[in-house]
Image (cartoon, rainbow, N blue to C red; front, side):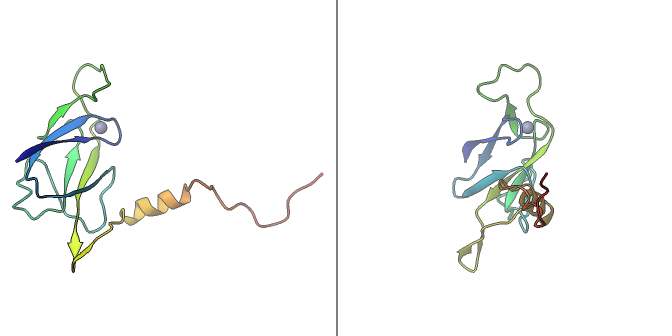
Length: 125
Ligand SMILES: [Zn+2]
């Protein structure tokens, strides 16, 4: 077993998790990936054949601490869930992993280029 630290994407709190070194991490996301099966840190996720771990920031059985650059007092964590995704393979190909559709649509609507704008004539004075 190795001890690995994961950072909450929302508040930066650190979760320490003991896990087998053979599992490959893919990403940590604030939302679940479509098709991934998540277990909680207190579950035996190697035996559960899980694809990832759902953390509840500061609340679950992982070992929580404040972000390294924080001098916050009290309990670490924001209480929001975030997700550790392991690399998954299907038919020998790595699965890229899509956020569940609700989040995809949201992200596209809020894209960096903004709305495409009205296509009609511009107002002039
Ligand atoms: Zn957090």
